Amino acid sequence: MEERLRWGEVRMVVRASAESTAGAFAAFEEVDPVDTPLHVHEREDELFCALEGEHVVRVGEVEHRIGPGEVVFAPRRVPHSQHRVVPREGRMLVLSAPAGLEGFFRALAAAEEAGTLGPAAYASASSDYGITWLEDAR
Image (tube, rainbow, N blue to C red; front, top):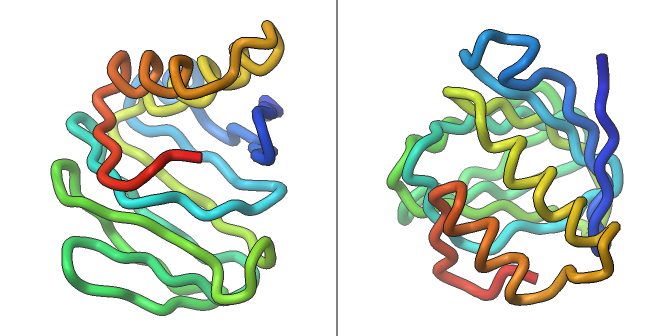
């Protein structure tokens, strides 16, 4: 069962969650692509899977340029970011393990719905889900 979330310029579909995978992993797809600044996850590893378009995924100090069908692994506690070669073009499926990162997205979508999306909402959700931003997060 897919779950559609929206906040700011982000449109995302949660394809798998803790509820559907017994906590093993989550999978989400950006419907309206945006770039993600450099950050670190304390709890999850991520696998970036390019579906359409050209993407640059930075993991640590290495930049990986990937296209459809290619993947990049970003282990937890390693700084990473991703952006499109052509802004707002392309699609990416991201798997995170263990599951839980979808809660961060749900928190931001709830803040959008409540009219409270802003720096405080990002800071709160980031703290709750073990994310440290090394560059400005939207």
